[in-house]
Image (cartoon, rainbow, N blue to C red; front, top):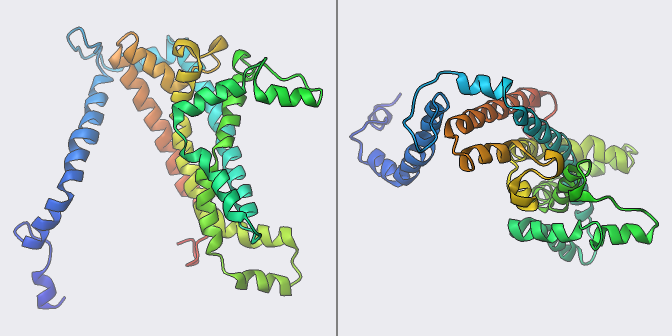
Length: 308
């Protein structure tokens, strides 16, 4: 290493380093006091009987034992959440890819359609939930009214335990514009040379999509699956707003994990138990994320080759 380069190595007294630390200090302070600090505190609290109003006592793994063996609603909330994740993530990902491919066509007025499909992604969450509560009304809702035009008896949606989760998944499909925009941006960067070469080889539209378009989209699909899975496991607002008093809907069909955790923390102030639930959810998300990262090497293709 040249002598000049050795002198510029990172040292605490280096003025350039001090300036750099000064610029990132707001982020570091936020990380320490607003993220890492509360996380470590909640980890400790998960091993206590902390309930805000009384002294905090260390009880070891009792909260975790109680979670697996004594709380029936824990398993109900976990199943509801897994159901939502298993169906919403693949459907929203496939829907976003499908719409992006359609909106990538070069026809007049396409910018208007792109704007229309993206608008739901920027609307306020609470307002959207109230809108969908009206749309999903069994008697006066627009969805059942349209179904009745074709002689189909619409379900009760949010009032039927078998249709509550499909109703929320349908609502999620309506707002795939955010993911669609990412896919559309990636499609804009795919070289036409690849498609021209495929035309010379006699490839049809499906073959070009399967062997060119889809592989070029896999990095964005991978990113979308990771972020969508994390967000779906943390579903809370929809169930809290769209069910009466946040009770989880008919038969507890919308009692998602985060809603159950919220009720334990802020309805009965059982903070120790709620913290143990939070860390269990963290472990689930972490395991799935690591699995996706490992498995991605088999199907994600990057422009640089060798999946890098």
